[in-house]
Image 1 (cartoon, rainbow, N blue to C red):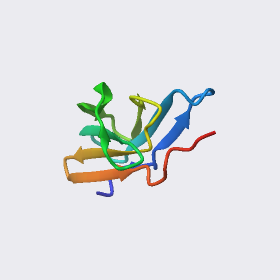
Image 2 (image 1 turned 60 degrees about the vertical axis):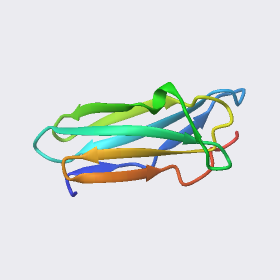
Image 3 (image 1 turned 180 degrees about the vertical axis):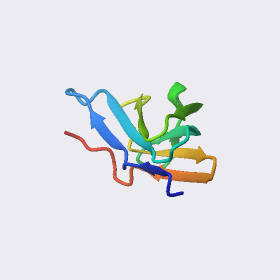
Length: 104
């Protein structure tokens, strides 16, 4: 979909390695509003999903030619990686962190 773009999720760990946040930037490049649905899943170093309140599905509308920034806090300090599942009117994508979550 040429009207939809994103950046690889940014993953941040707090000063004392106790809080992990994820930030995802989604872009609507079209002249019309786009409604997206997303779900975030967190994983431990063995690949098992870590359930959390921030794993729920959410629906957002992105205005024409603008961005939506999604920021979520990991459920615990053992979070290792994540995946966003994003549905647009034109299909579904999986956006992965690809790398383990950096330890500062």
